[in-house]
Amino acid sequence: MITAIFGYLKKYNVAALLLTLVLSISYLAFYNYDKQKDLLLTQMKSDTEHIVSSISSAMQRFHDIKSTMNLQKLVNDVSFGLEIFEFRYMEPNGIIKNSMFSEEIGKQHSAESFKEVLQRKRKLKTFFFEVRDYVKVMAIYYPIYRNKRLIGIIDLAVDVSEYAVITGLDTDFALTRRKVDILNLLKSIEGSIENSLAVFEETDMHNFLRAYVQSATNILEVSQIDSDKKVLISSNNKIIGKTLKADKLLPLELIEHEGHQAYRTVTDIGQLNGDENSKLIILIDAAPYEANRRQLLQTALITCVIALIIALFIARSIYYFALERSRSEKERLERLVKERTHEIELLSKTDGLTGLWNRGYLEEMLEMEYKRARRYMHDVSIMLIDLDHFKRINDTYGHMAGDEVLRQVSQRIRCCVRETDFVGRYGGEELVIILPETTIVAAQTIAGNILKRIAEEPVVFESHIIDVTTSIGLNNLRLTHNNYQAVFAETDEALYRAKEEGRNRAVVFKAD
Picture 1 (tube, rainbow, N blue to C red):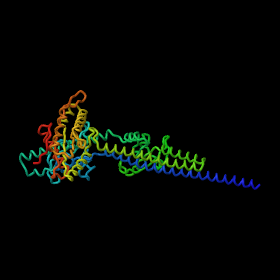
Picture 2 (picture 1 turned 180 degrees about the vertical axis):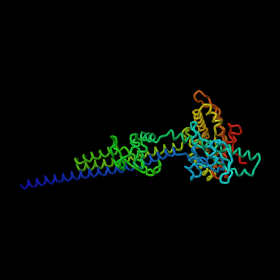
Picture 3 (picture 1 turned 90 degrees about the vertical axis):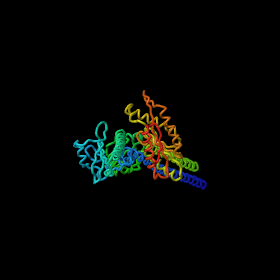
Picture 4 (picture 1 turned 120 degrees about the vertical axis):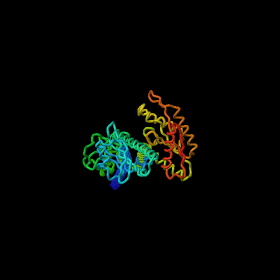
């Protein structure tokens, strides 16, 4: 009897112990599962922040490219030293779209001389003199055409009061030079407007987002909504123009999206599309995270039916395995974001036609090399290259031929300089080379090689053989220069002299 009791107690004590162990293992297994799930969700939120930042930057860059051209900055950059008194860009009916006087943007231009243009009493593209705000100016109304249709008019006035007290041949010559400079400036502005309009017509944000989503392996959908929850742009054509319900705007939520587990995030993007309350909705593929979650749950269930030591060992192994998976996934996504960001930054600095650095990045490098050379008293030379008779090439063989000439000339110039030299496209057919640690004598040698390389080998386009020559202006940093713009202006003057002296030559700027 006593033996039976002890056996009974022993039996049920062991059962209770086993039950306690199973419950403990189960509790530990599901506790581990819950913490791992939270960890994965936290990791996914962190990764999402990087993705949102990358997409927002890409959309901002796209929007900047398509934004209205800053004509006032263009006027300042290429003013040719003119004393610009007034500048404005208007629609054909006189509504001011851009002006150096911000308060008159959107208003009707009321000058009597412009009324005469509207009444066809005054011709466009002709210079005239008048008094504006008690100052004598030389002015011109310059038309902008696109596809033979008048799309805008530039009103440009230059202060010529200094010539009021001067008479004679010198005055006429100076005013003639002013007219040439003004027409060159207007040509530059005209080209900028045409390029900007071309960007507006050829690019589309919907296509941009679709291409972005297709190139990304972990993004399912990107949409922008306004303050009324209406979808403005989206990578999904089906929802463009629709108004989303409130439950579609809950941020940081796992949802089902077209058969995929998705993680939805909603973030403010401010003035990106003209609406202060616009938001960006991004659906990120949550399948890897959901797969990890299911794997953790399965592991927890298996752990509940195995021995304590083995169960703890497996739980610990899976715990660190899951952490490693999360870390690897994070590193992969971070690498992907960095790669995308680098690609976007490179595109923002590169000229699409020639593959050279673009004007914006060129100006940054000019300023940086100027400061570095002044600080360490090192030589730096600048070379400004312009293709001779480039307009004639475009008119004779077509603009596609002109583009091919620019591309081939750019590649030949690259072959003539060092890896440490900087080659960029300043605009149109003008190219700039920055030569660090280079004396003006060494720069002349390089210029001679470039002239020879380009002149000796014609450009072949389709069935045409196009002879190409260039004119080059050279200059070197001196202590008298206050900024890089001064160096660049003198280089441009040297280029002008090279063209006056017959083209296909390099001229070094010589201070008077």
